[in-house]
Image (cartoon, rainbow, N blue to C red; front, top):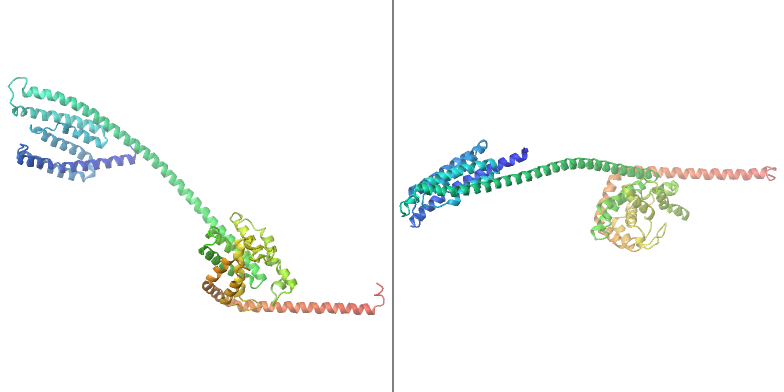
Length: 488
């Protein structure tokens, strides 16, 4: 039983072979034309009327087959019509005694093999055999007239017909065996190929269905991962905003340094540095981790963190512990991106105050002992500190900040990082202006709030100091007036 695909392929093959036979009949017009040419040249002696008859027959059959072949419902009829008409053309060639085309008698059985239809091949072999026998009979009536033979029973037309018919029968039997075997073999081979193709197509369809399911699952997982990453990012932003509520400038500083880390890392890669390390994915992790680099400041007292003016040596020592505190806090951060993000965040928080020449803190690391992410973070950190406003200073122009970086080349910062920052000068100006513009509406309000906050803190500190002095003075006075006090 043929599958739909197999049946369709065999039907398409029938139409193609029918078209091929139609073309053969069209080109067969060349045969009678060659008869006319060779007869005019004196090489053959074929009557022109016979040649014209063949030509007209070929053209007529070609037109009929062409019209039949245009109708898909008549393909089966067209098959038999084409083979039989081709057979009649060969028969017409054979009836003339002057033309010997014995080998052409196998043409129709061989042609029928192209249909991969054993039944059709058998039928055409039989019809072809009867046609050849009929042609042999007609030839027997005229062929002996061509030769000058002695009249005898041995040379009679009947004897010639019987003798040749026996040979034709033997030849036709072999043609039958070969063509039927060929039709069987090719048909079976094609069916096996189609069966294998169907099985393969079924397997491919199954794989496609599974692949679609896998793609769907992967898409869902990817969406979930994206959502998870966005959630993680939002949590990190939330933490940085909470940290910003502890310090006026830390919240904005974190958002600024996130952007600066990104552009410095990309510029380094574009300049040919650390290409293997600075992949797009790693740069995203770097810029996101920048939001957590100052998280240790939550353990710094607000009075120190938000002091207006220069730190005392004691206060500076307190400020210097924030990298260590940040590292401790980030060790409790849940695993993100298989722990890669966690490692970067810890390195940035702990090492962003280290310096290229080893004079930084908290560990005094030097050169490439400092992780790359922290070396980039250090540059972004200082850059924003220079060009942004603080309670104790106005922002520095970008041009002056570039001069600071040039002077710090090989000292505070790695030389290639300084080169990257300087090359980014124009872009930094644009980004800085965007930050200042977007933050302008709330900047003055927040500055006033923090100024009031410091005034209150200072007033409270003064009250505490006065109250302490009063208590101490009262104690001294009480100590001097109470005679029993000294005894105790």
